[in-house]
Length: 106
Image (cartoon, rainbow, N blue to C red; front, side, top):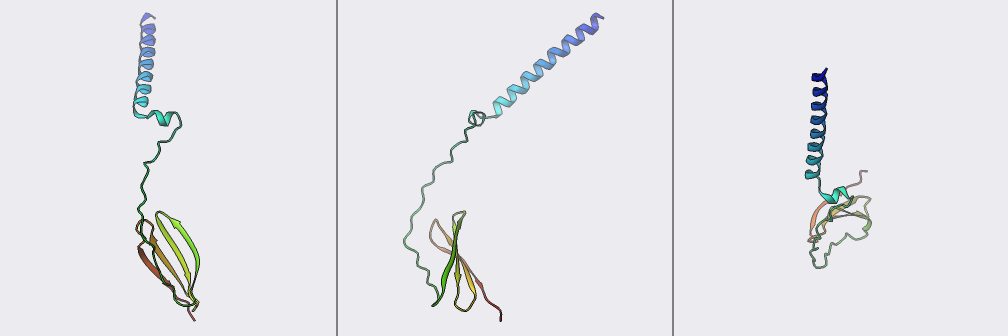
């Protein structure tokens, strides 16, 4: 009976020691900002400036929409012949990345 008591006491000590090691391992891997619920602030990025960008449209064309995402501007141009163009601009430099022409079928 005494052997059983000793075994229970030793197992209890091992469980407590294991829990302590688990808590220690978690605390050393987690930063205190995450524990407090504060997200780390992203580094501030200095935006590069560029001169005015001129992109000529065909006669009778109009801008149908503009969307900005991931440092790129997407401009939808409605053409007078019924087609459309999608123009992609890089916002950091103002350069044209590419143009996609959509032609109307007849």
